[in-house]
Image (tube, rainbow, N blue to C red; front, side):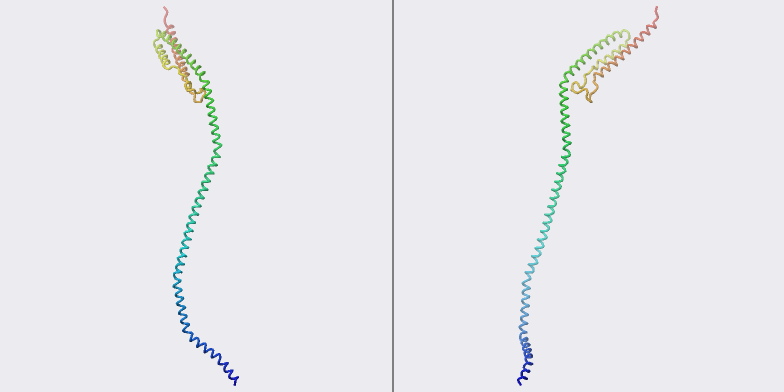
Length: 247
């Protein structure tokens, strides 16, 4: 009997526990629904509370991005300016180096040119000093030569005048030609060379043929012409004397 009761009790115990659990669940069901509703309200509340925070986070994120973008742009400008300044510095340094190289190249030429100028100045100074020492003697010699030529010209002119006076009695045409030649010679007296007053060296490349030598040549030509005229006159007189009959 006890054993049967025990078996029956063992079989009923799980069933009773299951029934109790179902009853407990049914009793807990409204409370669980209320809990779910409350949890939903809490979730909605949290969502509402988190919305401003999310917006703030979004704004903060956008601000950070904007700041990063501006920083990058500023860094890019600074880097560009730095590169430009560096390039300008390199360019100036290159120009300075080129100028220095050019000066080093031109320095020997400048030194040579300076030496040539100094030598030329020294040579000109020496020539000037020599001219100062030589000019008085040369000038005195030239004046003496001119005085002698002047006296010779006066003597020749006197001789020509005497010849003209003698010829006027014999041949008027020849006398007139000789007088014209003498007048032309007297109208242009000999002149001293141009270098005499300027102190130039007569051996210079720019030396001009002296006027007094030209005048001497001109006088010689005129004298030769007069001699030819006189010779022709004498020949003509001889012919006339030969052709004159003797009585």
